[in-house]
Length: 316
Ligand code: AHR
Image 1 (spheres, protein in one colour):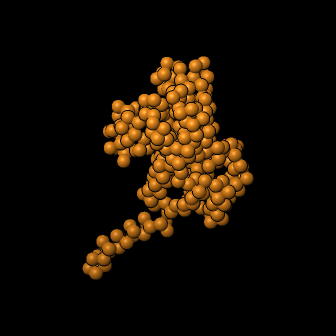
Image 2: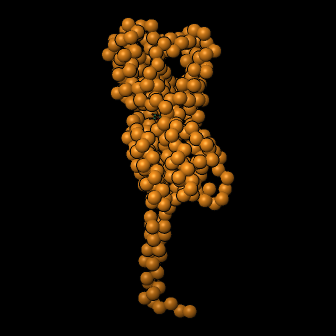
Image 3: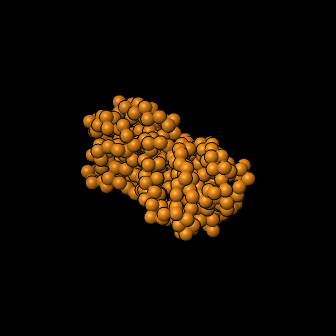
C-alpha cells in the first residue's frame, strides 16, 4: 500500500503525540502515600525522594501529611482505599493500632508497603516493609561508643517519638550492647520527639539535672536533628560538644556532617531515605504474581569526622 504524501508528513507528529499519551498520567498507576510529617531533615529528604521516584516512573502519587498523628494516617489510608488506588505506602508513626485499617486495605485487595518504620501487626496484613534494621543501628552506635570510651561512659539518651519502631528498636539495640559493659550506664533518657527543638529542650534539662553536665561522657540521640539541637544546648552550657560530651546519632543528614567537620559531633549512622524505588518495585513484582520478601532491608554505615567535609559537600 502506498501512503499519501500528506499522511506520511504527519507521521512524526503522530508518533510524538502517541509517545506523550503513553507516558501521560492517564496510563500510570495511582498510589497513596501516607507520610508521618516533616519532623526532621531526614523525613523531608525521604518525602522528596519518594515523590521524585514516583514522578520518574509516571506514577500518580496521592500524598498525605499526617502531622505526626496516627488518626490522620488511618483517615488517609481509608481515603486511598475509597479512591481505589493500586497500592499504598504507609510510614507508620507508631507501632501499634494498625490491624483494622490494614485489614480494610487487604479486603479491598490493595497492597500496603510499610515505609521506614514497622508495625506490631500480623505480617500477612501488609505486602512488605522497606526499612532499615533499627535494632542493628542502635547496636552499632553502642559498639562504637564502647570502643571509643573503653567501656566506661555515663550516657544521656535522646529517644525518638514515643511508641515508634525507630525509637523502640534503636533503644533495644543500644541497650543490648551496653549491658555487656558494667561501666557504661544510661543516666538520663527522654524523648525529644525526633525534632531539633525537642533535642535542645531535653538536653537543656539533662544538663541542668546533672549539675551542669561535667559528668556526662556521651549523648546518644536517636536522630541527627535532636543531636543538632542538643549541640546548641551543650554550647550554651559552656561545654564543648564532641570533646566534653561525645555526640553520636543516626540519619547522616548534611547538617550533622557540617557539625562533624566543625568538630562538634563524633559519629552518625546512615539511614537511607531513598525507599520509593524498592517500594514501587515490590508492588510491581506483586502485580506480576511474584513472591516479595517481608522485609527489604536498607541499612547504612557509620561515618566519622575524617570524611565529614567530603560527605557534607557531596550531600548538601
Ligand atoms: O523513622 C526514622 C526516623 O524518623 C529518623 O531517624 C528520624 O530522623 C525520623 O524523623
